Image (tube, rainbow, N blue to C red; front, side, top):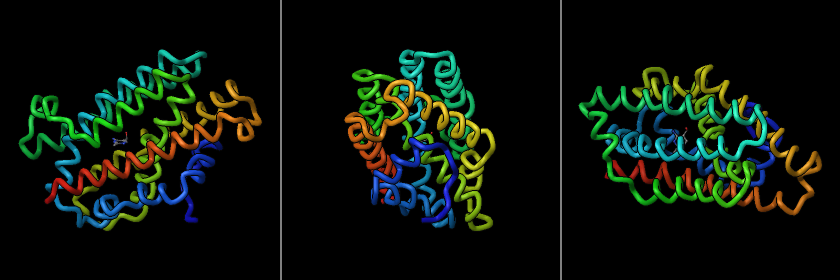
Length: 230
Ligand SMILES: Cc1ncc(CO)c(N)n1
C-alpha cells in the first residue's frame, strides 16, 4: 500500500475495512483526470455545481455534529468544520464557477441529482438516528478522503493541469490541518463512547459498514460528475 497521511487510528482501521471500495473512490478515474488534466471541463463544472449543493447539506450535517457533541473539544472541532466549509471551501466553488460565467444564484438553485441527494441524506440520517460517532463514520470518507486525495495529487499532479486550484485547496495546510484535527477528535470520540478496546465491541462492525457505504456513495459522486461530460 502506498503511503497516505496519518489522520489517526479509527480512520486507518475504517479505511482498511472498506477494502476495494476505498481505492474505487480515492483512485477513481475522475480523480486521475484531475491529476493529469485529462478530465473534460464539462465534467468538472458539472461536478462543481453539484458539489456546491452537496456542501450546503454537508455543512448541515456538521452542524448536527455540533448538536451531538458531548465535550468542548468536540464542539470546537465540529463548529470549526462548519466554518471551514461555509467560509473557506465553498469559496473555491463560487470562484471557479464565476470564472465560467456561473453565478452564485445559479449555484444555489441548481437541481440536486439523485446520487448527490442520496449521499447527504444518508449522512444526515446516520446522525439523526445515532450519536456523534455514528455521524462521524458517515462523514469521514468525505473529509479525510478528500484530504488523502488532495495530499496525493499535490505530490503527483502533472504540471500545468487546469485543476491545480482544486488540488491546492485540498492539498493545502488549511484543509490538511482540518483533517488532522478531525481525525484526532474522532479517535477520542470513539474511545469516550466505546472504550479503548473499541475494535472488539459489537458496534465496531456496524461503524465499519457505515464508513464503507459512505465511501461507495463518494465513488458514486465521481460517477455522477463523469456523466456530466456525456
Ligand atoms: C462529494 C464531496 N465529498 C467531500 C468533499 C470535501 O469536503 C466535497 N467537497 N465533496
